[in-house]
Every structure is written in structure tokens, then in C-alpha cells.
Image (cartoon, rainbow over all chains, first blue to last red; front, top):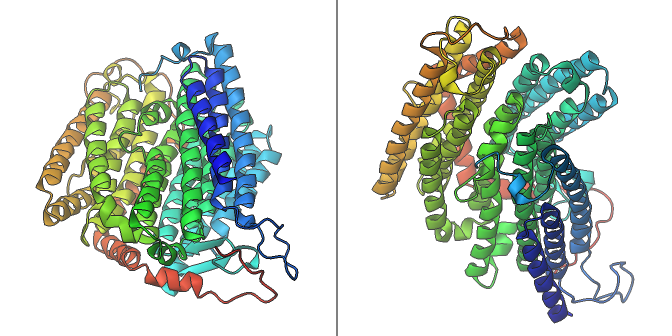
Length: 111
Length: 502
């Protein structure tokens, strides 16, 4: 389980970074979303996979899975969803104002 | 006065302002009352903490370390009070600044959500809750930087949001690593659990991940590239809020991490922190020297001053921290003042190019004086607090055996003096370029004067201010009281579930 999770996280980070290095800003936004999902999976993994049972405590329910990382990830997913929505709207506005959505359309400000 | 109110009042105001969208003056009235109310409850919290010790509120009645706690110690309460006071003045300014169509939509709700996120980030005692409040303040600040919808604002927001989203992903990774190592996320519970960790190098790696995240918020070199664009493109009251208050959240979080949570590996991280701080200081000043646009100059100056603050926070020895706190106060008041006064000048002259302004001392005599007070404060001219802050940092750098850092700090102070006085000269002296385009309303001029008066008060009462900041620094330097107060909190009645201990 841990190995397959680690491989999945690695693949997601690689895909996210690759997408973020594209010229197209929409791909950058998708890459950011993929990257944040990789971070969410790391958070899931941080709870470990010690228990298999649901964390409802009755007699003999040990070992149960640690519920905290799952609650954290749920929060992080919701926040990531909101931020992605904002970023897509922002990108659409940039497309309307600048007439394009590639990195070369963002060269008015010089850092 | 519980630590909940500085978060709850802006939230309630934001919701009320959302309900009043479209009714301009009703919304402005509610917003101003809410801003003043937040400043009042934050100040009352600070008074309560100064008199009665650290206050802890267990959210939902779940006892720490299992539930989320809000903790108001002297540091977090004074940061929240400072942020709320600057925000109230920023709101007053925007009441006069916003034109009718801009005022009608979401500015005021977003401003209060921003304030809620800032106060929450200062007051929370839980790392993941800090992440949530960071996201609240970031999402509000993205929208506020983009407010106005011009191409430059959208571009600046996109850069700002992209960099901070990467920061958020790293934050989650760091939280995961922290929880996997320590099995808790409570700031008071973490130090003892991390001390029991197998290897200090794992803990150091987690600390450096957090420094990366918080450094992005604090605009520390080499993570500062978003700041000049975002702070110069945003509307003036937002620039004042971002530069005056928001970047201090990053400095505060770095201080919390190194003085409480990761105290055990602070020594090992020191070379990284000191190098980062010194480069931030120098790079910001060099950038500011090259600017002709007044808001970009002030934005680069913020980076440079953050370098001083980070240097003070990271230096070993007892002198650095109180000096850094004094600089935080000085910069929050002084830079907000400079942005607001520059906004008045831009409004009057109709341009942001300083060389095209000139001679505004005739039409704006009080604003010119207020700007000068801000220049003196940020440049660190005695007897303003900025001088004593920078002096303290120089002294503690020398005492810690870093003469190179002290020399860099002194050189940066000279550069600061040069670019700020040159800006004042360009804007307010010389021959008037043209008749003033607009006469700024009183609501725009008043906040800068109030901030100048606050700086003057801080100068007159410098003994009391430094005495208080020394108390704050002593409390930060001895985190035992914080830990004992949070973990010693009485357990609430009722059954508490067993935690999934690892």
C-alpha cells in the first residue's frame, strides 16, 4: 500500500510540474491542481496504514485507521476546489482583457 | 474578552456587508463600524492578556491537544491588535477612495474576510488551523489584488496566486510530514513530541519546509518575486494592508516555528535563516533604488524592511527579538502611512511616476508632512522607533559575531535613507508640474495623519513601547508558560474520545 501510494504521489508531482512548465496558462492551472492533489495524498499517507477498521470505537475495533489525516485532507480538498475555481475565473478574465492566455500575455509587470 | 472575538467580529461584518451589497452607504457604514469594532475587541484582548496572562479557548469544547485551540499570548494579541488598527484606518481610507461602481460590489466583505484570516492566523494554536486561516486570507487577498480588473491587476494576481498555491501545496506536505513524525498538530504539544523524534535532521527538514512556506508569505529572498507586482498593482488601501500587515503574518509564523515548535533545531536552521534575511534586505533595497513608480518603490522597500525583521528574528541572543518586534510595529504603521499618503499624492497628481509629480507640498501640506514622518520612520532616523529597531539589530548582529551582517544592515539603512528621501523630494518638492487633477477627500487624508500621530506617540512613549516589547520578547523566549497554559487547560465535561495515538 505504502509503495503504490508513494509511486502515485511521484507520478502526480511529475505530471503537475510538467504541466506547470507549459506556455499555456490553463495547463499551469491544471498542473497546480494536480500538484495539490499530490500534497493531499502525502497527507493521507502521513496517517500511515496501521489499522484497517473504521475509527468507530467499539469492543475489539482496534487497530482502527487514524481519522485525523482524512479530516485534514477533506478540508484541503474543499479549499483547493475553491482556489481552483477562483484561478479559472481569473484566467478567463485575463483571456478577455489580454486576448490570450499564455505566459507571453503576462509581460506587463517586470517583477 | 476571549480570543474568538477578533475573528468573529470581522466574519459577522463580512456577512453583513455581503447582505448589503448594492446599497453603498449602508455597506460602508456597517463596514466602518465593524472595522472599529474589530480594532476595539483586539485592543481589549491585548489589555486582557497583558493584565491576566495567556488566554486559551478550546474550540467546540474539545480539550487540547486533540481539539483546535485559539491562544492569545502577548505576541499574538499585540499582532492582532496592530493588524486590526491598521485595517480600521484602511477601511476609512477606502470609504473616500472607492468610486461608486467599485464600492458597490464585494470590496468591503473581502476586506473583512482578509482581516478575519489575518487575526485567525495570529491567534490559532494549531498548525492545520493556521493553514486554513492562511487560505482564507490568501483567497481574500487574491480577490482584493485583482479588484478593479485592469490587466496589470489580473496579471499581478495570477503571479501572486500561482506562487502561493505552490506554497500551499508545500504547506500540506510539511503538515503531513509533521503529523507523521510527531502525531500531533497542536503548537504547544509539538515541541515535546518533536524532541522525542528519532532524528533531529528529519525535524530540521520539516522546519525548512515551513520556512519555505512562511518565507513566501513574508516575501523573503528568493521567494519575493510576487510582491512588487501585487503590492503596486492593488488599490491603495489594499497595498497598505498587504504591505503593512499581511507580510508580517509570514514573519510571525516563522517566529512561532523557530521559537516554539521547532525550538530544538533552531540552531541548525540559523545559517539558512540569516542568509535569507540578509539577501532579502539587500535585494529589496537595490530594487527600490531603481524605481520611478512610487508604489513599486514602496513595495521593494517592504521587501528590504522584511529582511531586517527576519534578521532580528533569527539572530541568536536576547537583543534581536525585541528589535525585530519594534521594527514590525514601526513598519506596519510607517509603510501603511506611506502607501496611504502616496495614494493621496497619486490621486492629486493623476500619475504614479514620481518624476512627473513635483511641488505637491503646496496643495497637500499635511500629507507632505505625514509622508515625511513615514520616511523618517522607515529610514530609521532618530528619534523615531525605526532607528532604535535597526540599532538593536546592528548591536545584536555584532554581539552574535556576525560583523558582515551588521555591515550589510548599515549599508542597507543608508540606501533606504537615499531612496525614501529622494522619493519625498520628487513628489512634494520642486515646481508644481500642473494644477492638481483632483482634490482628495478628507476621508483619504485623515488615515495617513492618524498613522503619523500614532508614530509620533510611539516616539514620545518609546520607553513604554520598548518596555512592553521586551515583555513580549521575554514571553516568546520562554515558551514553557505557553505550553503549560495550553496543555494544562481543564478538560471539558463529557466523554472525550481516545485519540489514535501512533
